[in-house]
Each structure stands twice: as structure tokens, then as C-alpha cells.
Figure 1 (cartoon, helix red, strand yellow):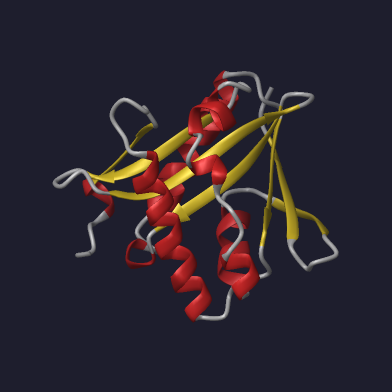
Figure 2: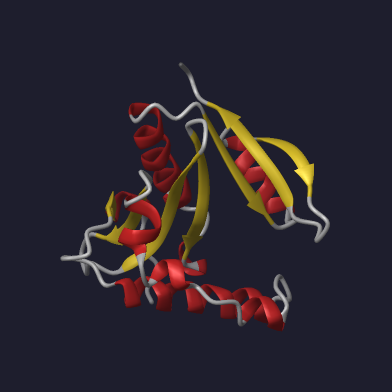
Length: 166
């Protein structure tokens, strides 16, 4: 894939009549291969199912969340995505923040997050939470967005949270 520049990227709400869930699942798989090659995930993590990406409407939209994709404008290729789950107490859980490795450090992840945050704020969410691996670049990214570390799980993953304005 040739590397698109961020201004050529559009972020939009996923629409099952326009976008392929399989295409998103395949993008996720290619990112997981990249992570496996760099030993950022284990072979058992690689094999974990990604059923939510094959049932986006049921998993994200029906419970009151959303799902956004980043597309390269010229060719319409999906280069990133982010899911937002609604949890009890108007808390939103960020899931599936994925950007193709060739597109890292171009502002695409920030654009995706800002779309999810805007949705969350307009829909009455009070807080966003997420869980991520223990990778400094990833942690720095989320901290730059305003998240703070809130804990460490038994497997070493880091939990983070961000209070939204009321």
C-alpha cells in the first residue's frame, strides 16, 4: 500500500451498506501480523477471534455506541478504525483503535479518536476508558489525547481513562 497523507484521509461513521466488515477484519489481521512480527503480541493473541468486526452493527451500534473508519480519499481504502462501546453509567469504552502500520504518525489515529470523542460528548457520555498494551509509543499517544493511566491488569495491560466535559 502506498502511504496516504493525513489530509487525504476522511473519517466517517461505518455504514454496513457501504463498507465491508470483512475488509475491516482483514485490515485488523494485517496489523496483527505486523504486531506478531515485532513480538508485540503472542501467537495466542494473534489467534483470538475478532467476531465484533464481523458484526459491527450488533456489537457497537445496537448497544448505543458507534464505529468509525478512516478511508483514503482517492482510492476509498480503509486504513483505520475505532469502536466505541456504551457501558453502564454513560461510560464509553474505546476498542479496536487500529491504523495500518504504513500510515502511523500521520494524524489518522487522532482523527479517528476525535470522531469517537465528538460522538461520545454529543451523546452524553461522561467518561472514556480503554485498555492497551504496555508500549510506550501507544501510551504516549493516548496520554497526548488526555487519557491518564488508571491501573494495570494481571496480564500487564494498562487501563486508562478520560473524563469528558459535562
